[in-house]
Image (cartoon, rainbow, N blue to C red; front, side, top):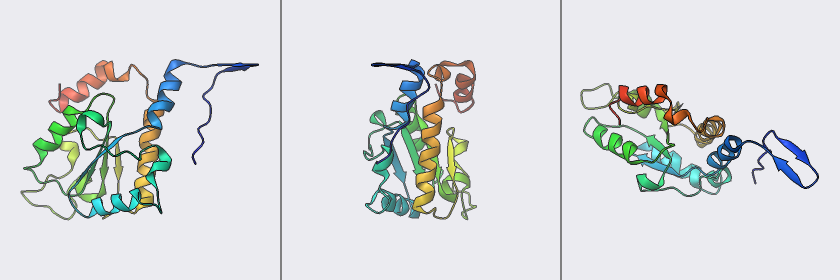
Length: 177
């Protein structure tokens, strides 16, 4: 069972005080709801990560969501054809803020070995990506490491970052409102 260290704060007999941002960050990091968008062999490795041997639920992600409105982590796994790109973007846009994206495997990250007219050469051409997991396909340990990197982002992200002009400019560069 994963123990979470208390955030920096003021302690005393019977009380503990810290900032709201740190409490919200810890809550977000330890309750991620992933939406698996699996199209090929990387999906099989994700299934292994969900199994008892690796147990992704130790990291607060035991509830995969298959509705974008109830997910905050989009895990894109495998080859994305150019015909699927609008669907991936639509799924991303339907997710509520804050949302994170994890590109799993060589195909989702860069098109992999499929350098053809029909394969998208990385999902970062259509949506912003927070964490890339290398490999073809990556091992379950790498998936857990990528999830922990997302947890670090969620834990340390300012509550106001999503309203910043820089973040709005990033979304505008992808034509996302």
